[in-house]
Length: 104
Image (tube, rainbow, N blue to C red; front, side):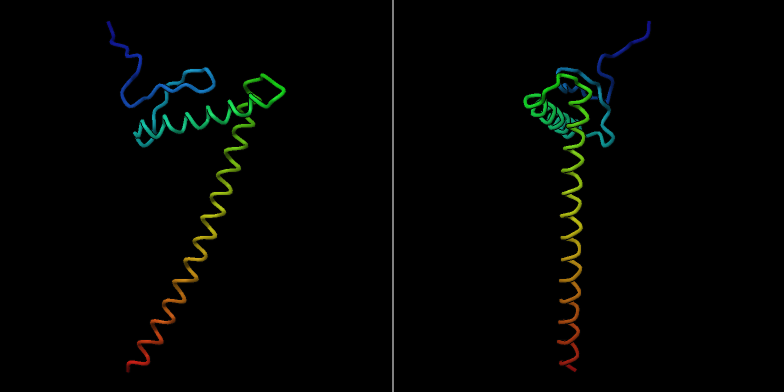
């Protein structure tokens, strides 16, 4: 008789909006996967609390939009910091060039 496990290796059971899911973390990080699932659950519960609908699919789509917005804002901040870092790096290289030229 085959041995079927309820929770196969490298999977984690999470609960999101009163539904259980078995998820296989791509990076193998179970704790991170549980944390991400908790964030999705939190978003869905926040939306459900203030929403005029109990439709789980609509709540999930709204949560996905909120999460996508957070991601886009984080990417914008990341790009702005990268630009600032590149500018500062260029400034430092210019100052270093001047110092080295003056030492000759």
